[in-house]
Amino acid sequence: MNKPSTNIVVFEPSLIVFEGISNIISKSGHHFHLIRTDSLSEIQNHAAHGRFDLAIVNPTLIQNKNKEFASIQKNFPAIIWVALVYNFFDHNLLSQFDRIINITDSAESISKQLTNISSNENHLSLEDEQELLSDREIDVLKQIIKGFSNKEIADHLNISIHTVISHRKNISQKTGIKSQAGLTIYAISNKIILLEDYKN
Amino acid sequence: MNKPSTNIVVFEPSLIVFEGISNIISKSGHHFHLIRTDSLSEIQNHAAHGRFDLAIVNPTLIQNKNKEFASIQKNFPAIIWVALVYNFFDHNLLSQFDRIINITDSAESISKQLTNISSNENHLSLEDEQELLSDREIDVLKQIIKGFSNKEIADHLNISIHTVISHRKNISQKTGIKSQAGLTIYAISNKIILLEDYKN
DNA sequence: TAGCAAATCACTACTAATTGGGATGCACTA
DNA sequence: TAGTGCATCCCAATTAGTAGTGATTTGCTA
Image (cartoon, rainbow over all chains, first blue to last red; front, side):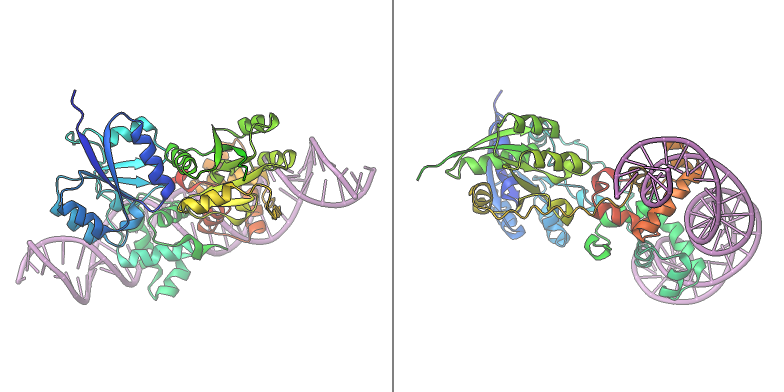
């Protein structure tokens, strides 16, 4: 079988991780060529010159550049976008990618994600029912996470306790999470709150 | 100058990261020999046979094994312990290590941390104030954070609901935290739980 | 402009959690 | 051995939160 060479752009701040990927794929038997980059605009530039077929991207780096990223994806639909995650990330963010590599994945699993470029039913169906919470719901969520009671939340937000309860109901329905603890983890995971700000 | 060879044990779940370290140090010009391991007891075994001088450890892996880890450190005081962190970690946990490598560190910085074995003003102070909660209280806390009700916790731990309530009372008194949300953040901050394991 | 989603408020019935008292047995240690 | 902390269990009174249902106003947009 003829093995085509794949050009891969890597957008990842960690040298360790970059070298690790480099090492693993060089042992995989496939033909890859890695290009390291440190900005989205450089990726766009490479894409415009057809210099790569697949991009491995650390999602933290595009967190506040969703529009720019989406625009690049739209302009170069042939490119496969692979998220490289250390921990876990917001569904909405990850749903922008075609595939996901977790940093703890095995060599085979990683290679698999970087090959079979044509076969496109690679998971990531991630049913997109992850409706974002409304502004007010996020206000309430933040209060919940600070440990305030419904009555306190009502006072702080100048609304009645009934409204607070309504918002809580909606939050629970939208997220499928009922416990304060679960909501806290949800909020941390989705960067609705910053862990550092809430430490005792 | 004579370059001594350093034997390094690596306790890190990610192959990518392991290979990355391997790549970086092989280019550093120093002489290292890497041994990958996947358990603390294996580390102890290697240490007992004098097979390494320095250990690179992902702190997540010793989170609930602080005592075992401290015991190994105590038994083999000549070994240098290096934490390899991805993001942000609890200070108490990191204070158990001699040095810290961040995953985003440069090649030079990493090499620096892995050399100069003799020169070090070890600040292995290990302020052991983390004996706040009893084992059983931590069991209950973990259940709370999973969002279980008192009754469910009682069933899971095979104790009565009254005991659960007692433990909760003690946890609240000891930590000064009353809300589930606050306790969740406490547990995450103190690495009693791993954020990744609690995704909903 | 008609429809929709968000934000607000309200009621009832129900369930869960908190608070503040107890008690017992066990293991460790000063 | 007396004291301490831990784990277990119990009760009563109170407070807090959930589930289900329904309503009004406002602003955006198809």
